[in-house]
Length: 253
View (cartoon, rainbow, N blue to C red):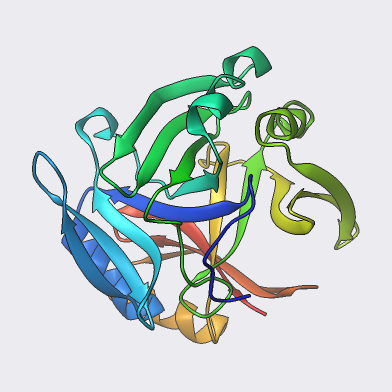
């Protein structure tokens, strides 16, 4: 279902990147993923750059807030919830941490920021006028969200209790792979952290027409190839980073 107008409770519905150089990031992702941008003023100064694909919102870029300066940029994953305040009340009793208490974002929605018991940060979104991404699972849009964590035994029950997600397990290249379910559909995955310099985090996958061609052009646009293209049962994958950081993967079904 590429075009979306609603999201079931607990479904990843939005992603954005607070970055140290917003204009450079717009140039990189615009050319790499075919995005156009709509700059919306932010109270207090600055803009929130809404990324559009075929006229539909798919993601956003913004300036990194002062509290995050000195930290590497990271893509945020948002989860749709019916009531942010009610959901936030479950976080700390379930061994998570409330990083930013609920607040309204104009008439777009109400959000909060939290971290799970493994330290991975995520956002909650209660939609008003902005439901999240209007286009998914198509080139230029988000196709999957995956929690890379060193503590799957701790965090899977956390998301079940806080977001009401179901859990199934399947095989992927001979390894057990955990998937979260919402509204009867698989909506996200859980994978052991790859280690190295990457912290536990929610990882974003963008769909592309051709992984090899996208990887080839990324360095010329200022990006980095962290993992060369490789085949999986669900298609070709590769891992990249933008010019300022901000690790993400690309997927060719």
